[in-house]
Image: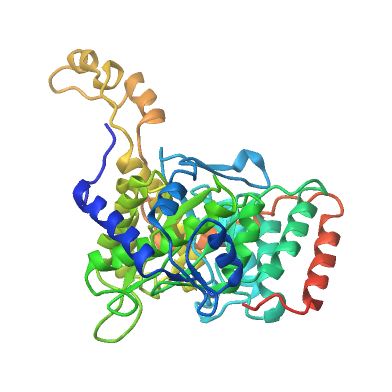
Amino acid sequence: MALALQPVLTRAEIERLHEQSLDLLEQVGIDYKTPRALAILEQAGCPVDYAQTRAKLPRDVVEWALQQPPRVVRLAARDPARDVVLDGRRPHHTTDSQGSQAVDLNTGERRASTAEDLRRGVLLADALDGIEIVNVMVAATDVPPQVRSVSQIAMTLAHTSKPVRSGVLHPGQVPYLVDLVCALLGGGEFRPIFSAIDCTISPLMHDGPMTEACIELVRLGVPILIYPMPLSGGTAPLTRAGTVLMHNVEFLSAMTLFQLVRPGAPVIYGTGASQMDMRTGRFGGGAGEYGLKLALCELAHFYHLPANLWGLSTISGDIDARYGHEATASVLLAALAGADELYSAGLLGSAQILSLEKMVLDNHLIHQVEIMTRPFLAGEAQLQAGLIAEVGIGGHFLTRRETLAALREEYAEPWPPAGKTALEVARAEALDILDRHRPPALPGGAAEAMEAILAAASRAADLGST
């Protein structure tokens, strides 16, 4: 029998949240901050205000949109054998995105992240078997802002054959990304081997250029992770239920737009709601925000959509006791909640600081949680009642062939190995990967084609910035 959490919301509470979300969308509306979105919504019968870039979404339009997206979403990879299918059967782990710092593996120094940090992080994520989706995890601050976003996605695509994800900040970046993908695929037709993030702006707003970029990506069949980030007490009500309501309204506003662009567009329900530290004003903190995410995961299930949930997450900026208990608690809760995707392997400090040692530790923690939550086998072969009777009172099982067979099938070896600390093992493993692992080979001519595409992007008039 599979383990699971008790629901945090009743069916009646979920339905109330849904109904009030529809009321707010219809009566208050959303600021999309781009006339391109308004034109699409207006054609569907939504009242729009071009002067204020706002739209109100009638409930019948939203309810129609909710019937369109698929429950099962395939995240395609450069290597089709590494495609990830989000179908609710098990969680898939991913690095988080756009951190701004990195911990130097050799010196322990924390500093602004660079392109080399991103390259190393992607290389580790490609090698570690528990990480299945590779986000653009840190900003390459040494790359000019004009071309940084496109360059970061290019580097990530080139250094892993797993599915890639990133925010795309401006519609002008999309043609270059299409060209990069086609070059990586050997000059063939575009295939969406990356997915994109759409972050709303609380309360009740969208980022105009990002929304326009997502409209173009949706038309190309690129899956979108819709990721509202309301902050309890700051950009959302302090109550958890109020924050969940705000989050759901923003999610539905993006989902509806994307379904109008392309009915059946694959979307993922992101659960970025957090709480503000009311003493300091800082982002995140406290056990309360995990309850927010569990409630949002249940809303995703109510809508029959795949859910992305925090796991392996920590506010701590160091690999310390706080990291240990927060990462373990969050990944275990997310796995038991039935999340499809789990953030954020390899990142400390509320997903702002890349640590290669943490990425290795997280990979081991992923496997520990898989062992903890795997189905318990209790058939005749596992019960071994006959063996117990045969060994009898006062005997032992160490030399029995059945013990050797079970060793291969059921035994979970303790980690870290006896006599070693987790941190020293993780550091050695990270250094070994950097020394030995090579990124998947590119098709002939792809590297030169990518360089030419990035050079053209760097000369472009307007691609947005970081």
